[in-house]
Length: 124
Image (cartoon, rainbow, N blue to C red):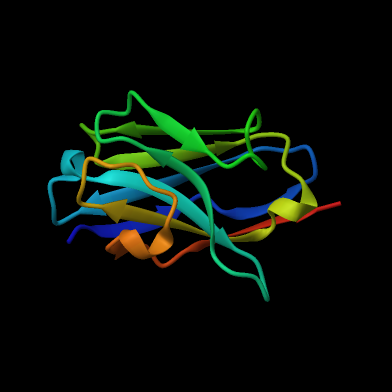
C-alpha cells in the first residue's frame, strides 16, 4: 500500500483559505483513487472530496461544494485540497486516503491507505 503524508494545515480566520497537500510514496500513485476525509472532536470521520485515478472526475461533499476543490498531480505523486471561504464548522483533522481501485467511493472503510492527518482550525 502507498504511504501518505499530509501537510498544509493550520489556523486561519473564517473566510480564509488553505491548501492541503498529500504526498504519496511506495506505490504506483496513479493506480489509486484518492480522497480527503475529516474528523472533528466527538464526531465520526466524514468524506470531504474524492478524485479518480486520472483526475478527470471528482466528488465533493455537499457541505464543501463551491468552496473546496480536489486535484492531483500524478507526476508529483501528490493530491491537493484547496479550501476557500473556510468556516468554523470546517475545523477538524483532515486525512488523505488512497484506494487501490478504479471506483470512487465516499466510504472510509474502503480506503486502505491513510495519512497521519493534519489539523485545520478556523476561527470565527
